[in-house]
Length: 305
Image (cartoon, rainbow, N blue to C red; front, side, top):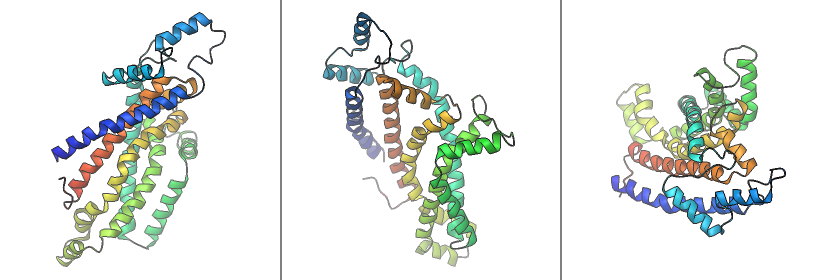
């Protein structure tokens, strides 16, 4: 398995390079500049700003400079916050985003797997139809609708949780549930489908013939194979959690990466946008690698040759 992981890590390098190259070209060739919104900026100052950030140099040279800095772990200086580097801005917002994504993932996995198992074990019953109906509702409801609705009920009506801000675990609950509910609904349907595929397998029938209790059969025999579709989905889902947290962080005033990313897009802050894109790309590639490794742990038929 170690050789497989090393091969995959080496294979991530050209993929990441292609992502960085395309993202850099799209951002830099887009109309406008980081200083287009400035009012009455003197031409000599504009020349100095372009020279400071290297925008006065040919595009290939700018790309080489950025790749050189990226290889050293330097993501550049923000044009919106000239006193701060992109590394500092990401380090400032990343902990809040990771906390939010972590709670959302825990909520999605816990609720989704539980609902999916109950639906599969009680196939075509009222439990099955009811839980899958709720799952369809969760998939259909966008976070910008669910978030204000939860805040209205639990924060502004019953005063159980704060409607926004940051500072304690209670501040993470509403945005975490808002962000994770869509994925909980999707995981519930995937778990149900995966469980129904293994429910008639020979090893499950053998376990029942041996007289094992039903909960042992479900947890030890059915769940392991039934979770394979969920594991496949988890890699891009976790990355999407961080991307979609942009909306949730805006709704609940969470000091994560999301507000910085939105402001950077509006202000054409090239280096900050690139830094966040690179961060999300690395996370997505590594999570997909972890999914491949987890496959071998869940399914003994898979070999890494």
